[in-house]
Image (tube, rainbow over all chains, first blue to last red; front, side, top):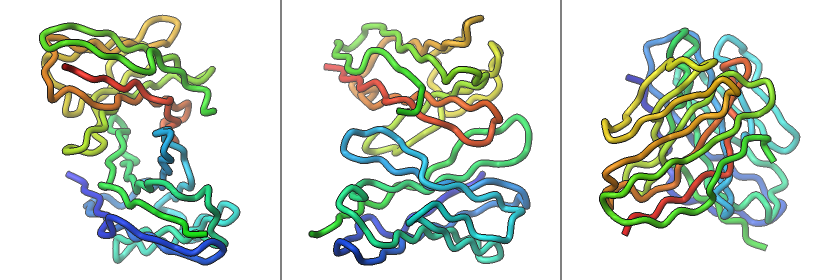
Length: 116
Length: 111
């Protein structure tokens, strides 16, 4: 079974600075998808970014980018120019590309605090 | 706003009772997923439906059941409720079975 590990329960960053959240995963599959979701205090789960394992290029969405290292099974999220609104729980998630098993497997999350 | 709606937002009930949580997916999405978020278990996949048919099952208790109706909305039924069932229940939907978009969740409190 696939597992996702987020080793940093909490992180903090100064406003306008850059922070990197770590995620590692374990799988024997070669094709899969990886996601970062943000959960602010409202508890809504918001998609931040998505990466297909077959793509070598790292995904980028505005201030959010990932460092995808397939061989190392690592998928970190970099937030540049941090804003107060970035404060939230961040969850890394894995999804198999095999048919019939589209469930998301989540890590335990990292709580990000942004200091003004 | 993800386009996925869930009702009710909050639910308070007693042990032994039965509740029904409702989810309406984004327009055009055929897949609906249910997840449970609790402090001790984190976010866990419960069940998936695709166009009315059960497609995948996760850590769903036998006391829990779900269905997806012809109009694609889904209901999650929780029965014989226990204190440990208190959690945030999310519904998510997808059209391409790749990216899942989450609803706002239903917060269930069992007293």
